[in-house]
Image (cartoon, rainbow over all chains, first blue to last red; front, side):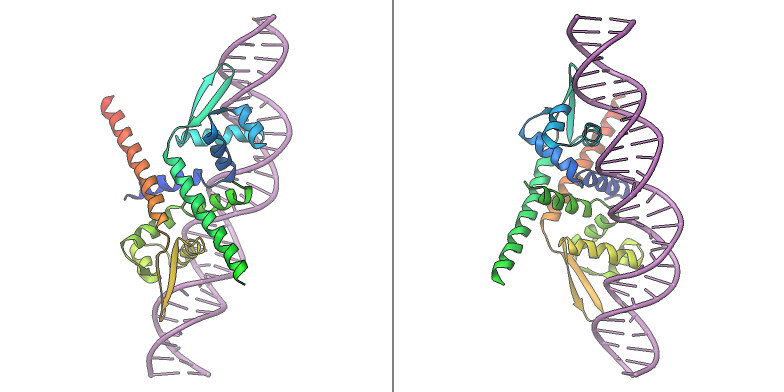
Length: 105
Length: 105
DNA sequence: TAACTATATCGCGATTCAGTAATATGCAAG
DNA sequence: CTTGCATATTACTGAATCGCGATATAGTTA
């Protein structure tokens, strides 16, 4: 695997390495939503929501579609779901392990 | 999914968001190796190799085992393989798309 | 204990990036 | 075409982190 490709992979992982963006993805997993809806759903500031959605869109994890004044975003790459599920499973597992260690003590 | 857990997930993705660490993982996929071997394999400086391996180990993507003077690292979580495969597949796909667009022009 | 090798860690300058506030752009109704 | 709302972008600041060189720690051997 080439050096340039490795950097691309790293960059894509970087897009997922931020809880703000994960929160947006999580919200979009329920249903496609507009920026305004996402601002309400996440409590983030409008500027940030827009910026992070822009990054997710540039990485083509999500797609954007104008609807009059609004822009509706949606999950565009199903792989992002698998990736998040894998990582979440890992975190949940760790949490269980920590809990078990606590009880065992 | 809780806010704290989301941050953990983001942090784990962050560990994979760096070509140096991906290179180390790629090397370790061939076989478990010592720091010295990894320095030779990747051309990175010893201090950096050690630092990045430390991060990978703290995330428990890799495991470390002393062998006399050496420390041998190995892939510890098979999920990291799936994660990388998914992302690499995505990058390869993008590369194919770019190529096709170029030919079509 | 002393000397040697392998690995880990520290301090530094440079770069990157999140969040904020303010502003600019796009679109629709009147 | 002007007003108003939705979205995007900009400039800024502070925190995080990379790579580097130097140094500290751990383990082996003599």
